[in-house]
Image (cartoon, rainbow, N blue to C red):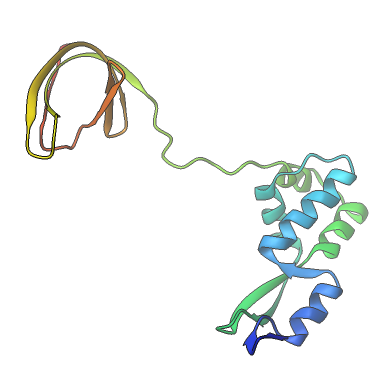
Length: 160
């Protein structure tokens, strides 16, 4: 199918979508809606896992103006598997949440800081702070201000 001379998707891709097979971005939303109709509170990440496990048959079609190969997933195959052979692992997959990577736990410490407070592009004041501060990853938060710990113009002494 072309739009103003630019390939949107192949004719076979259009046929696949009419038969219930979609790219992952569409398929997981459609699957989530169908599972919600079955009274199962599914997540997008869980639907993606289910589609990769039960709906991937290696089918791909050309799509976009660069004719990229886009993999298509069968939503109906996943629903059929759910109704015919439901298992505990399938239900766990459906409600799975995406794991958070490198989740930072904030830490509160008493610190002594010396830093530059810029008043214009070439003028600054040297400021000092002593008291509690919260450290989150590479940032230190104190007195409604935050500074990057790896910054050049910050000196930190931990008191406790």
